[in-house]
Each structure stands twice: as structure tokens, then as C-alpha cells.
Length: 455
Image (cartoon, rainbow, N blue to C red):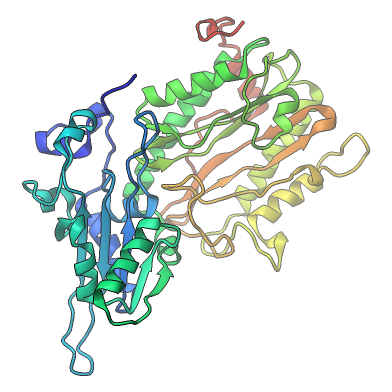
């Protein structure tokens, strides 16, 4: 049983140890997070935002991951914290003006728990405002009184947070005014803020992508007839962690044969058969930022003619979507004019290339959307009908899945739009063509993953 947890960010900061050396989260400067909080305040129009971070799991073997909006606004990765951001309010009707305010509320330290969890910070810790970068740091016990000082006319918060509901109810009852608190979804505001990534976020996304490329390459080389899907999942996860990722950015999908036609196949327990293809949808999360990558490879290292045909159509669809991109104009989807979107470009390519065994177009086998935004979440918030521009990060992932032929092919890369409006591929260094996939597989060493329990 594991009794100790990884060294916390606060302890690293207090000790002056480089976080990158110990694979702790890389964090942007405090100035960046404060600018995000101020941008949020500007959208509150005199209101208050209340966000809660995630709590530590009840069981020590359960994974802890910070709430994404909370992390975006604070860069704070310790559990049990809350954040208040209040917009400035001018003098009105004789009432005094209120300044912009930001308060990080931390739980009080529990020295006994810290024997198991590691050292934490609280509001009384030395240099806590310098470390967190938030103007005020208070005890979580002060939350109701701070809300009362600002008033509760309009509060933006997380609607599914039980802590937020309880805090608002308690604050309202303590005021005794009888007024109803108007609570609104803060994610309506953070979605817009998070839609465009700043240069620091792009670099973290690049590191996640580079680690994911290495993991995919290791998996491709390890594949051969008879290897178990789960063993390949293990190769992927081990490579990601060794390269500095804290976790996969989503549960890895490794599906061979008929399993390659199942979009979210999770069992990963079949032995790979000679003559089949395998779809590997797997990538890593680096310092809270995700990547998303899929490759399809032949189990025996050589595509059949039919597999190659389907593969090339999917690759052609990905390239057609990328070539159709125009910064400030292109959208991922367009409900009124579907053909004008990147999704439409990929679907039109698939529809006009190749046939199934019944001489019908292949577009009916493209059964999912082409794309989604990527960031702190592998499916980051985004209005996919609005034009994409500099700072946009998204996948292009066409696929064809034909159960009748036991062929599933998906090719997925994570792209970003640079400051010049040019589309760039984070995954450019991972083989794309069928020929390059086969060439990489020639470096495989049969039995190299035998130690993982395959045969």
C-alpha cells in the first residue's frame, strides 16, 4: 500500500527546488494567472465569481486532479481551495465604490494529515501571497463573510458544485436579507477565455504532444501478432510517465481486428491477430495540458491492399480538412452550411473516394465528428461554430469503421493556429503515411514486451 504522496508544489517552492527536475507540474508565471482573473472580472459586470478547486480523494490510491477552470485562473494544484474574483463597482445611488478584488481561500493545515500527504500551504504560511500570486490569501473559513462584504446580487459559480451551493446558501442565510441569490454558470465565461491559448499554454501543449509522439512510436514498434492489447496500453502509459507526463490525458484505446471499429473500445484484452489492423487512440497530459493522438497500424507490419486503400482515404480526408483551413474564417462545424466547415471538407473527401463491398460511398462509415478543442481538458470548451484563429488548438481526426470487413482506421493529430494564422501540426513528427508506418514497424523486436505478460 502506498503511504506517501508526490512532493507538493508548495513544498518545492518553499525549499527552492526546481519543479521540472522532480516532474512536478510546470506552471506559468503568476502574472499570467492574474491577467486571466482580471479578464474574468471584466466579464462579471459588477458581479462576483466563486470557484472551488477539487478536494483530495477519499482513498489514497484514487487520482487527484485539480478542477480545470480553477487551475486556469490560479495555477494552484493543492486540494480544497476556493477563489473569489469580484469586479470593481463604481459609486451608485450613494453607495461607495468597490475595488476589484481577488481572494484565494485555503484550507487550514492539518499536521497529522501532512505526514501522509506532504506539506501544504495555508493562509498563515510565510510568503503565501508571493507564492500563489493572488492579492489576498485567506482561510476558507472566511468565505461567507467575504461574500457578504461584496453582496450577493449576481454570483457566477459552478452549478454542479455542492460546495458552491452550500457556500451560497450559508452566506445568504447569514445576511438575513431574504433576497434570492442569482447564481449563473461561470463556465459560460471561462469557456470563451479558454478558447484561445497563450504562448505559455502552447509550449505546455507542445510538451504533451512530444511525449505522446514518443509513446505512440514505442507502441508501434512493440506491436506484432500475438501481443495483447493491454500490453501495448502499458507501453504507452509507461513511456508517457517516463517522459514527464503526470497521466494519460484519457483512458488509452488499443483496439485490434473487429475492436478497431469500436470508437471507445476500452477492454484492451484481445490478442492481436496476423492480418488485422489496430487503432491506438492514446496521448499524455503534461502539467495539466492534454494531447490527443490516434494512429492505425497493421499488426504484422504490412497493410493489405484493402487496408491501405481505406487508410489512404482517411489520411486524404485529414489533409483535405487541414488544407481547407483559413484563419478567422474556418469553423469546425457549421449547422446551416455543413459543407463549409472543416468537418464538411473531410466528409466530402471520404464520400467521393472509395466504395464499400456493396459499391456504396464510404461516408456513412465516418460515424463521429471530425474535431474538438484541446487544452487543459482533452475536450476543452469551445463554440465549434465560431471561426478559429490564432491560439486555437483542436484535433483533426477522420475515421472509417467497417465492421463487415473488420477494418477500422482513424488518424488523429492535434493542431494549433500560430500568431500568423497558419495551421501547425503538433504531431508532425509522428509517421502519417502507410509507408512510413510500415517503415517504423520494421524496427520492431518480436517478444520485446514479453516481460509485460504477452505471448
